[in-house]
Image (cartoon, rainbow, N blue to C red):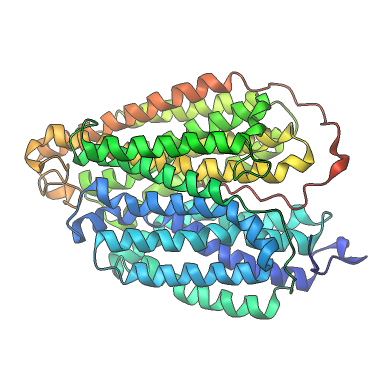
Length: 514
């Protein structure tokens, strides 16, 4: 695939200094990318207040970022062959750092959303390009050990991200959740120039430009129309129907295009494999529910309970701890048994925890909340890792690269849809209870940005009702995921025949953000 140096005899014994140096560069990029997917949620309340805007608008700093990630992930494999992995990784760092600097300097909600998209274009390339460099340098005999190294920031990101974000928002400014990337990015840039092995561009397969032109704006327009339904008072407005119809038309056009194109952006022929199709569908439904609900918790803690951003981050940590403990165990078990035996209990546990969140009040014990979030993290760990593994288990090795790219896109798009859906439901619920907010759900009395501790008890109760109402919707979205999970295999699949055509060494790595 490339002219990068490969491991020589004797290097398979352990992780040599050169490989560890390459891993350190990739970990720096991973830290920036992963933290930025989790650090922003605790700042939503502050950003809504500072920019004097509603939740339906400000949630786009999350949705826009994840959509940008989904857009650029399939480009990365082609670009790595076309321009070389080292050049691509350095370009990703530059884009991400430039986007971070512009986000920190944003003067309005709209400018921040635009700059977050730019940041996401860099962030989406960092992980796949970095992990490709690392796996090629390690070789097949050491890839498991180097993946364990890169897995550390993956697991710690959901724990440290909200805490770091809360500390920066409270003690400095929300701008520092973006400016913090500048020194890290500068170090990563210079180390990349010095340490990463050189490689030469190669002629790869032709990139699916038409597929990208259909799918990316199609998803963006469909989600934009959905998000606008809250501020426009329902689905009957032109600003809602118009973008959604155009978006769905573009997505349908992509489906017809992909089925007739050998190297489509997403290989829809993979969905002929029953296990892959069911696992991907279950994963999508689960992510829409879980990742959407992850936006709600910091808002509840700050708007209803009056907690600071930092304290909110600390209170969310049990969820990340639960996921961190469960993922390695679930990953090991997924190699030994049918994934249905793991995913069904995992989804049931997530559903039970959502029911627990529907019982929140204005003074629910934080010990109770921590226990719920810890159990939810365990459920996420026993769901996401087996679904990712199971989706790939029954595919031939030559299909794994495209399949893992498709799963990456599914994860990011599901997170975008979930964020938009839950923000719409919460906004409508707040507007119903506080009609004076003018449909935004963000008035000073009811709004996001108020201090819950100083609000009258009646208002806090009404706000809590809006959040618990939204958690009921999250619970409802888990049900179809659970029903789909019953179609997953409950026995370990037999080895796939016909793998002699190639290997999985260049598969795009699956990104898991708990």
